[in-house]
Image (cartoon, rainbow, N blue to C red):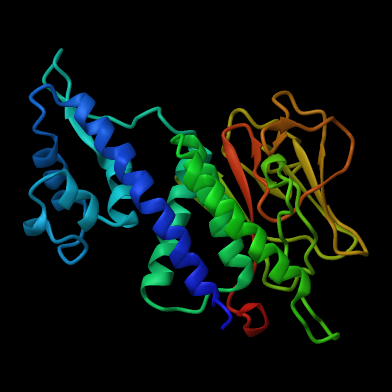
Length: 304
């Protein structure tokens, strides 16, 4: 019997849960000299989770803690986990500085996908694959190599599903999928539709959206409203920083316009004045702003 996309996401969450749990517990243990870390975890869960999320009354020791808290709880603890600074007796986030802004953005996305899964909403093959990609990256970040490899295997299965799925020939989408070299950020193309957009995240908080350029059109991204189609309030972005274009083949390209701080694609700076393909799932950073390619998931043809 075929495994549904929702079941694949469930398996990814099953790999994330123990890995995140062990990581969070270890960090709490290290930051609480009196070793009363379980009590502190319960307090933080109570402060930052809805009452129905975790059965706090069922948590008595580390074993029950790891059993009762799910991925949502562990991700919220990474965001809000606290300890007392012995120098000034102030509460501090024990995970501050542990993850890049991009990874924290991925954690928020994982929370959203976890909620989609929990509420039994439809999940496309593309979405399931994207969950696998960012989950594997998070597992690598916390040194959970075994679980990361298991999630990559799931990603490869979803990749094959995306390659072999039968679509109608008219307006048929081909999924953006990362291939076996996903660790290097390689992806495959997708047909874009009206309603797809680019999301701009300035320092992870100021989020704005802009439609993708039409075929044979371009967008100029920069700091100056006078010279840019999309002006960003980011001092590290040049007045004219980046061009995003879309050609006849529906391919999106990025061209760095000799910006001062560069354009970074999957962690590597792209050369100036040289068009580079931009594929779904690839991270783009300019200054302190992250660009995310968003697809219109509300269309039935995108739903598995």
